[in-house]
Length: 217
Length: 381
Image 1 (spheres, one colour):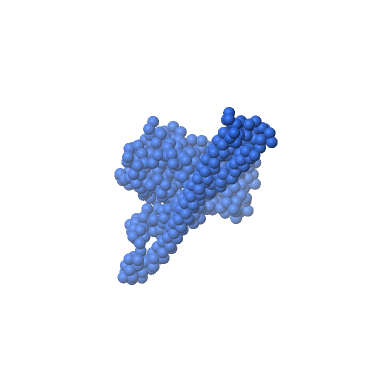
Image 2: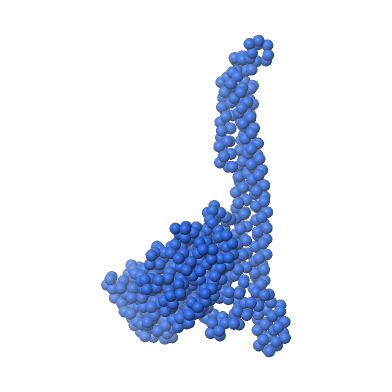
């Protein structure tokens, strides 16, 4: 190998290969690459954490939605069944049984029936459980369940986005190893051209990764 | 200016919050919310038929209810509604309007359904400072300035009639057209006149036959459908009347092409091959529309497209009420009235934006023609 010898005027210490600026530049590039690798790895971990959190929240929201949906369905079926029993009891003149069934109803169901019973005969719907009855609570419960499901879907989409972001950043961190490798190889050659060539690869990779990090941040 | 901004932002928030399946969008996060939204309350009177067995019975009420509960769920508001069972009987409308006007909890009205009732009760609502937004009253004269606080979210018959006439002329190759209209009913009379004007302009032979609302026997109409007649236009108010007429024509072995107005855009008019008009594209073409249809079906079972504008009308009323609340901290008739002209909803479940012209007509309203098929409706123009 040949090459220019730098070093001090005394010339007894081990001489640096090539011009000093090349060594300094290599060191700076490797240092920046190390910092960037650390930052992307940190951000990737943070994003994975967020994704995990949102996945958990999404699961919880789906559970809530299912519970609300089941509750709405149970209430709708239950209130209709109880109402039919109640009407039958009234029609049979069994006031005691009617009273007992009324006691089994929820407050909202009783309110729905009260509203219905209070309507003038000409305007009274065939059932208390219709949209015109402001006291009928089932639509609101179904809508709450639907909203919860929408929120769950939203969180799931967000979590997927965050996971993708984390994976992209991990990929950037992996690419940075090229910068390390190329930067490390510069020290093995005495040819200035070879060293500058490896350093260029390292710099280009570093710049590319820096841009990618900004894009995927 | 503040009110204009508030209404636009509120509408934007409503759209963003209702959109798609996703979580909060950037627009959603950026939209202002009313502090203590639960204090935004007030009754919306809903004037629509329920409890009976008419072709459109309960449909608008169902859609209005979904709109109200959805709006409250999104915004945290506490608006409630009061139902008034009014279809096309002006006397019933007047009786209901008297109660609405006297009830100071009522801040606005969604309805009436029909033009005839709108004409009867409009001056009462105007006098009481109440906004009333109809999802289906289409008579052209309703927006001639005589009804100050009337708005509608559907196209006027000034658009619908000419569209029907053009479709008949250009797509149905008419030799002679029979136009069947209801006696003395403003919607039917207005639409009928508009159709016949369009046919006359094009020198298409036509004959008008007048029938009663809910007429049981259409033999007089069937008799007039001779070999020359290949199109029967049905600007009728009640879809059950139109179905009855179609059945009598078929029983007599006569199969002219049938075409009706928006009042026949209901499942009760299930005559495959017939054409009907409506004011908006199919709600199911948009994600938001599909979401709301799914919601509707999960509450009420079968889907009824006719009521879609009732959802939009209720959304308009609530958006104005919410804007009034944002402006004044409370909802009053006066506040809603002032907020109404500035209501803008960028995307409704029908796929069309909502804003109003100075005459209170729907900006950019269109009329679409659908073919009735055994599988539903097919957009043809």
